[in-house]
Length: 251
Ligand code: PXP
View 1 (cartoon, rainbow, N blue to C red):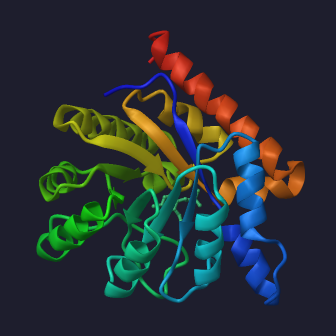
View 2: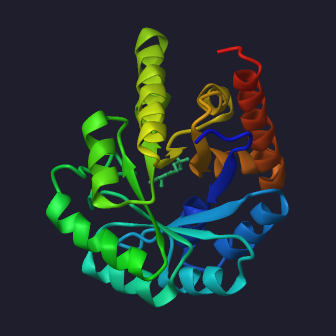
């Protein structure tokens, strides 16, 4: 599957990070989600972490009640998160690895290594009509395991691409491209996310198999300077530029 358009899922976790720094209710991540939708976000992503360092259970309740676009619930494959997902039935769940001490999601899920645990987990969520995505590194073994396990889609981790420069970055781009192509061959929907910024989003958008990007930290940071709606509109323009580039055969 290739697509003319790429959906943008706006991750609002770090609005909650700022709110929680003072323990009050401002800035409100639900309000940010509504502004994001108004500005063109095609979906909202929120990561309910085990330690509730940013998004809270109440945020998820309110997002489910008020959003007019799909909520993508990022979650670790724990019993607690499964119960919350089954209770709320978000449009999709993105399963991520989670370590308590990490600053952010540091690597992809080991689907191949955790196959037995994840297989039942994915089946349970899918049976409740929740579309399941697995957040993985762009590695053949992981992509094939995600397909075999019955996931609806994968999100390829773009963090390594974002964190490198020069030749290493070119190699990471190639890894993402090959991974996205393999997904297409396997008929697996493919998304991308982590560390995406204005500077790098076009190159990833030029890979035609990607149908959705999930972007948070950069958009929320940039909102300090230009406002959230403006940062979202600019990101969407750059995503469209990248997609045009591949349609015109420029890559
Ligand atoms: N996708 C997944 C699965 C993530 O865990 C994150 C970070 O929470 C993102 C996308 C968004 O990454 P960033 O905040 O760097 O844009």
